[in-house]
Length: 230
Image (cartoon, rainbow, N blue to C red; front, side, top):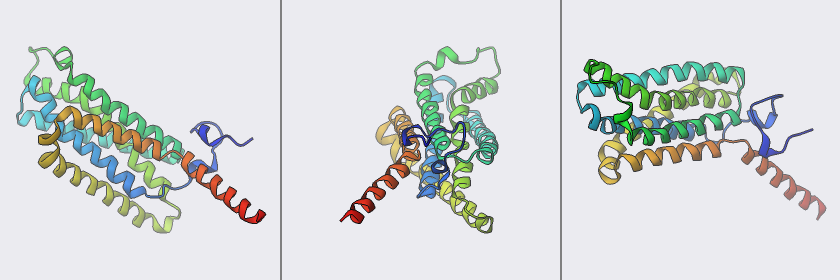
């Protein structure tokens, strides 16, 4: 029995509708990676009241975010090979949105989760950066491998597909850096920016679910049936 489009999930027997490519994979990669770099740019301001703004702070933030991306890419690649799935991509985006929203919770309680003052300064900064920003970096890092896997229709075009999607992701990162540093922080403040990042990732999660493709196919079939009946 074929499941309703509302219940396409990455469990059990794979649903053919769940492995169809995204219509605009570059857009998803662009926005997803852009959100990650926005978080990285605001990280220093979020940690500043507790550990200050210094070379140690930015070193810890950049290192933690890169570690999250690296591990996320590795895990995301294994998951994508095991089960390429739009519903799983949707879950990855939604989990990323939740982890980004969790940054706001930590932002309000940094003093209560900060390392003891007896710790060396370096470890205090690394601890807070890891606690607050590793999880969203890891989860967003899992997204691009799945987007690439879903976009691959032939091994003959692997290089072009990977290059195009990675280029879109890096362009998103560049846009996120310049937009955040030159416009967003001064205009809106860090909490509003983080909330917008979480909302954007949630929208990507909803938009990437296969339900929309299934509903579109159903609408087209009804139109064709109506035309045939006429």
